[in-house]
Image (cartoon, rainbow, N blue to C red; front, top):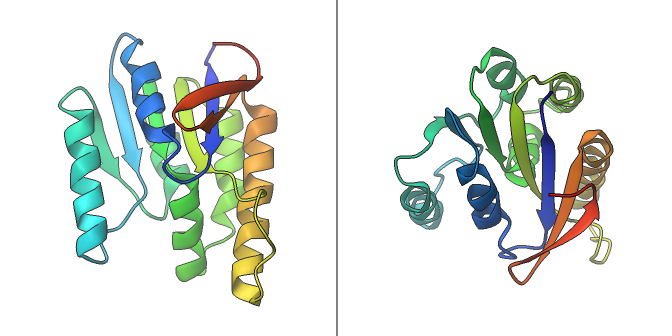
Length: 168
């Protein structure tokens, strides 16, 4: 039976590093699925830093859009998806929001251990523009669905994991 872990929290709260720490304790084939795209120098720097942090322990798959297909076709022992926040933004940009429902169904039926990382967007103010409100709503609802399906839900604050659901 697969273990589903959802890690959420604020920006730079230690979510990705903690996901790697958890996954390193698993045996077998480890896969890291990155959703970010290198649109500018700053993103290229961030992506390279994350690659160095992972080292050679993980096979890396870069998939900014069709995450459900990658997960459906994946064979591994443990996977990390980092992150739903960027992935949801990519879906808005490419007008592919229907893939969120596909992701939820694939996640529900996954047969390997998986850790999914996402930002918590429900702690801030409501933005003044419609696109930002739509984005926050979509990501917030996606996070809720993934949290409901997950065995374990962790909330990161300043590098410290707080268990909201299940145990680890």
